[in-house]
Amino acid sequence: MPILAAETSIYPDDLLSHSAHGLDSAWWALYTKPRQEKSLARQLLKARIPFFLPLVPRARLYRGSRRESYVPLFTGYLFLCGTDEQRLASLTTNRVVQAIPVKNAAELVEDLKQIERLIASRAPLTVEKRLLPGQHVRIRAGALAGLEGTILFRRRESRLLVVVRFLQQGVSVDLDDFMLERID
Image 1: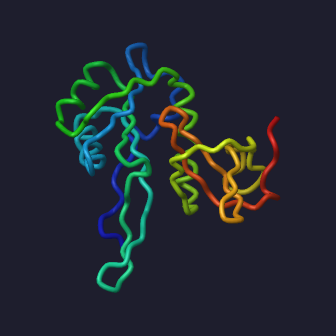
Image 2 (image 1 turned 45 degrees about the horizontal axis):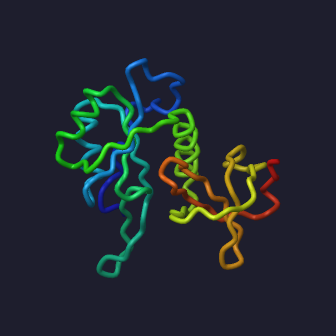
């Protein structure tokens, strides 16, 4: 049973499917004050400012019973796509420490699309803070077919790492070798 129901994590729903967001729109990674990501998302939704906040379910034991809540995948970050006026509006919420401009918006959008697919698959994800060099691969079959990433080897497990290059962070998922094909 969730402590709180899932909230809106993307506005508008088709934000990541747009090929062009308007000539005056740009992407920013908003670095928030501690534990302010969801509050900022609520304020941006109310102001109708386009954003993406990747949220994942986390189970915790609370007084002997299992509870599920939704937490930000990348602690402290929310992605905003909008005009300079919308960026300034986000800064006036007193929840943002820094608005980091994204130089390669197309690359960020592709990375965020893959993150969104991984979240939708409900696979258990692990945030990877250190990006280790490894083999670039593509998933051949299954619900995640077509996703690309880098293989990590940890504790005898094969993990696919999908990276948000802009943040130098990523998420990983356990996979079997037979599901992967090498990309040269």
